[in-house]
Amino acid sequence: MTPAPAIHPSILNADQAHLADELDRVADADGLHVDIMDNHFVPNHFGGPSLVETVLAHTALPVDAHLMIEDADRWAPAYAEAGATIVTTHIEATAAPFRLADELHRLGAGAGIALRPTTPLSAVEHLLGRIDLLLLMTVEPGFGGQSFIEAMLPKIERARRLVSEEGLELRIQIDGGVTARTIERAAEAGAGVFVAGSAVYGADDAPAAIARLRDLAAAHTR
Ligand code: DX5
Ligand code: ZN
Image 1 (tube, rainbow, N blue to C red):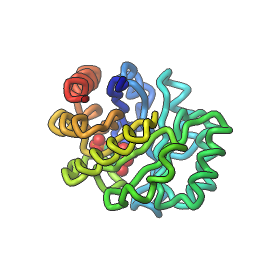
Image 2 (cartoon, rainbow, N blue to C red; image 1 turned 180 degrees about the horizontal axis):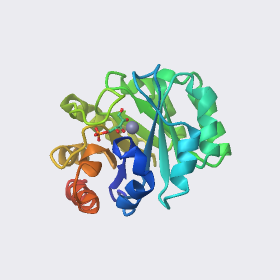
Image 3 (tube, helix red, strand yellow; image 1 turned 135 degrees about the horizontal axis):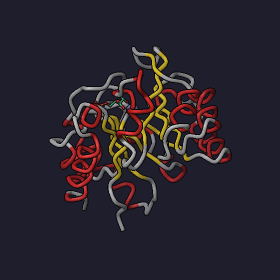
Image 4 (tube, helix red, strand yellow; image 1 turned 90 degrees about the vertical axis):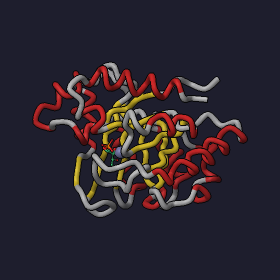
């Protein structure tokens, strides 16, 4: 049976000066997405392992850390040690993804692999049986508030097909431009975990925005 869709607000779009309050606003989400950026892999800088620790001190939600950083093999284990439930690195910045997945598992975390919009699925095909989350970027990584790239829909569909053909357990996450206008087609294409930054933090009523996104996704999950 297909698991229920999950909404993971991205705290990149939260008011960083009031992080504890901002975490309260999304307490009924399914997980929390913590973006990490190093100013090299993407032209922006945000977070570090201590941010994961800070967040976990103020939320009961599982945290998925999205590492938009170079040399990910070297830095990812620290995020598992900081308590992230899933640590996701970009395939474009991970030299030994099989080894890293084993290491993250040994540290008690799930392993996720992310793809930039133009990175083909074939780059991770052989890896799918060894990871827990496949993150397909639906914007160019680096900033919140960008528009969903429609051309990613067939890629989500192909990923969904691969996962079901091989009977795999891994979840397909999408990140970037997820809104009430885009989530239905993404759910229909086969995504199951939805990162939502501005759609949640830009709403007056964040719990209502989360519930609406979840309902729209559920109604379009096959
Ligand atoms: C972008 C980040 C996203 C971002 C999403 O590179 O990985 O997680 O916060 O923000 P929205 O939902 O506003 O596109
Ligand atoms: Zn992200």
